[in-house]
Amino acid sequence: MSQQSQPSSSKSPRKSFGSGFWLLLIVVAVAAVGYAIHESNKAASSIANDFPEPKTLSSNPISDLPKQPPDGNSTSDKEDLQGAWRVSSIQFGEKKKLEDELKDFCVLFENEYFALSAQAIAISSISLDQTKEPRAMDMVEQYPLHVAEQKTTFAIYELKGDNLKVCVGEKSRPTAFEAGADQVLFILKRDKTDQAKAKIAKIQRLIAASRDHIAKQKAAADFEASPTGKSQDNLKHIAMVFHAYESGFQHLPPPAIYSSDGKPLLSWRVLILPYLGEEKLFARSKMDEPWDSAHNIELVKEMPQIFGAGPPEIRARGETYYQVFVGPGTLFDGTKGVRFSEVTDGLSNTLLLAEAARAVPWSKPEDLSYDPNKPLPGLGGVIQDRINVVMGNGLVESFKQGFDEQVMRRAITRADGQPVDFNKLKP
Image 1 (spheres, rainbow, N blue to C red):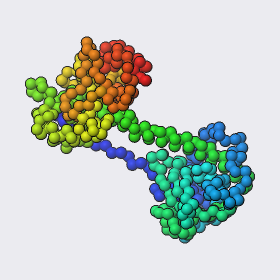
Image 2 (image 1 turned 60 degrees about the vertical axis):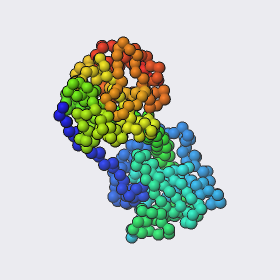
Image 3 (image 1 turned 135 degrees about the horizontal axis):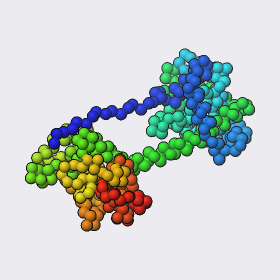
Image 4 (image 1 turned 90 degrees about the vertical axis):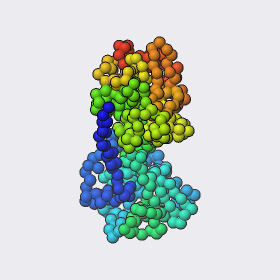
């Protein structure tokens, strides 16, 4: 069989705001004094208007803030910071912007959040350390960035009644309240005017939406890092490789690499190595020798990470739970490789790859043997009570243990003409 080379691919670089939240703030400040950022203004306004008023806020959002300005006697700076502030001046390097030029600014501290609004809006969560001198403030970007791109900015602050100084370092935490090449100095005064109310309402809606958005993003990130999430990601990737292989060779990989007399030598997992960026491992595999020959057995310990799932000791042995069904009527029937055009039941109704109950050496030509007249092989060795599978169309499903066996058989076979009721397979 000729080797089909894998098209090279590269990830697009993730967009970043560069030097972080406070650089965005400076850009906004410049915009406020003449360099209008029309698109940012339009986007921020659209987003703010789309967010409904959160139930936790009253009809008058300012009422959710302290009724009286703090007197400075609180034991918590966090409490004393609560409320609206206006920016009196911003100084960065030799440049300084004064209050008249910054009239569009509104700064709000609400609980653990800090928000800045001008033509654009930026939100950070904050943590304070009152034990340091000068006192320290850490800001973690929350909006508009994706949770995975959050950056922490380090600052110092001085709070005296209705006056607040904040000095932010671009590279490290400042030690003095002075502007410089890598430091920005902000002077703020508490804003007690009625004009602040409308701006505060918009910011509060964004804070509420940001809190919900970040919680959802964190839940998604936690799932991706979980054993289930990692395994499902692996299954998706392998399914894409199967599609690339079928497109190149006009058929799926056969269940194994066979000797001239029909003896299975190596798994299909070896055949797809070039599509996984493992060309060197593929080249080092001796295709005319069995998986456990003196040479090939040494490659078991070099199992590609994508085949790894389950307990660390299983992965350390070079064993995998990812197996295909082989046997009459399956997608891996015979020794030639099945074409997608032969899947008359539809790829979305036909099982491509599953987590088996028992792991096998990744290069060994051993998979889930299917016989319509025998019990089904065991499934689901990675997650208790769950079986992750991927269908022929690349969609990952999570099936329950104790599934309807007849329905599972319909999903395993590619051309029986019977419908698959996934409700009888899912939890």
